[in-house]
Image (cartoon, rainbow, N blue to C red; front, top):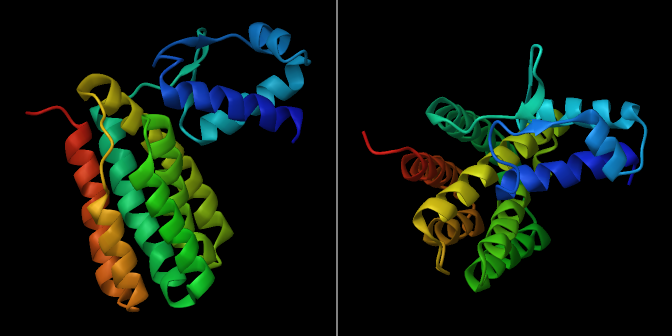
Amino acid sequence: MTMVARIADSIAERIISGALAPGAPLRQDHVAREFNSSHVPVREAFRHLQAQHLVVAVPRRGVRVAPLDTRSVKEIAEMRAALEVVALRHSGPRLTTSHLAQIELALIEGDNAKTIEEFEMANRAFHQALVAPCGMPRLLASLDGLQLANSRLVFAMARSAGWRPRSNQDHRLILQALRTRNVDHACNLLTRHIQTIERLALPAP
């Protein structure tokens, strides 16, 4: 792993978990000192994080952790609902027995999760496995960034409302539809699933 990737991944996980709060400043010199690196890989890591919508560059105030507000929740959900369904339409017909086994493994790991961290790792793995065979690398790169942003929502909801182990029925229904090669139904279920996350994340009107 390159120094840029190490820095970007480490900061991303802190933002996603809430260890770095929205609006928190990120100082190049502090990050460079922590990773014993020059400022060049830090600046590049910040650019990666900005592309993933995890940080923002504020004029005269430097780089800060991106806000997590109502507009961003809706934007993330709507982009995911559109792009992940496109990816699933292309990957669905290409799913092999091995692919379906990977999806099921992620589902089982999510069901067996004892902590929010274990659950969200399995959740990300499930959604990535759904679309991995789509053959559209640019789309997958966009979805990776959106999934990280979505993970922030999951952790934020867990902090405010608590979290308890539970079975993910939506994931189970999506897998059942894919096993029967009913890709259209799987896409409809996926759209509903993502929209449900949006409703849970948004404050009541």
